Amino acid sequence: MNWKKKTLIAAGIYNLIWGAYVVLFPNSFFNLLEMPVPTYIELWQCIGMIVGVYGIGYIAAAANPSKHWPIVLVGLLGKIFGPIGFAQSLITGKLPLKFGVTILTNDLIWWIPFFIILKHAYDKEIKEDINEIFK
Image (cartoon, rainbow, N blue to C red; front, side):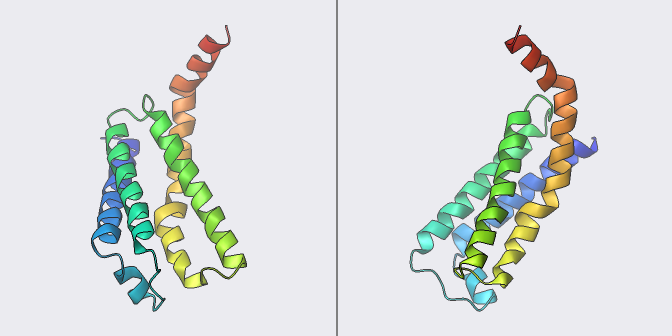
C-alpha cells in the first residue's frame, strides 16, 4: 500500500473517530477545555457528523486517490476554510485560542499530504480531464 492510500485511510479513521466523539459526547470537548458548553450543542454534533462523513469519503478515495481526487479536494478546501473561520472567530473574540487545538489536528496536519495527493492526481488524471473538456 502506498503512502497516499495510507494517508487517506488514516485521515478517514481519524475523522470517523473524531466525528463519533463529538456526536456521542458533545459536551466533553468543551469541558476538557474548560469552556462554556454552547447553547445549541446540536450544531456541534452536526459538525461531528459532517467530519465523520468526510472520513467515509477519505477511506473510499484511498482505493484510487487519483481517480477520486474530488473527495480529496473537497476535504482540503474544508481543511483550509476551517482555520479561516477559526481565525475570524478568534479575532472577534467568539472563540478562545485554546479551541485552536482542533485546527491543528483536524486541518493543518493534512494540508501538505492532501496537496501532494492532488498534485499527483493533477499530473495523472486532472490535466487530461481538463484538456478533454476544452478541446
